[in-house]
Image (tube, rainbow, N blue to C red; front, side, top):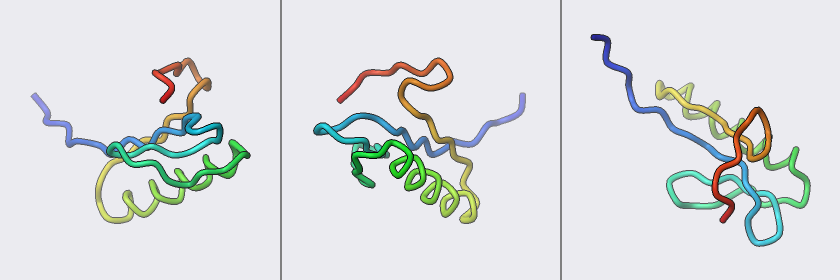
Length: 70
C-alpha cells in the first residue's frame, strides 16, 4: 500500500466576526473580505508546497465544506 504523507490544511473560516485562516490551532490573515483571507491562505499554502510539504486550502461554505465555525 502506498503511504500518503501528512498534508498541511489551511482552513478559511469566520473568526471573531471576520474571515481568517486557521492552521494548527492558530489564526492569521484576518479580514472583513473573504477573498483577502483566501489569498492569505493560498500564499501560505504556496510557501508550504514550495518547501516540499503537501497542503490543502479549505474554505468554509464552499464546495460542500461546512465544518465547525470557531
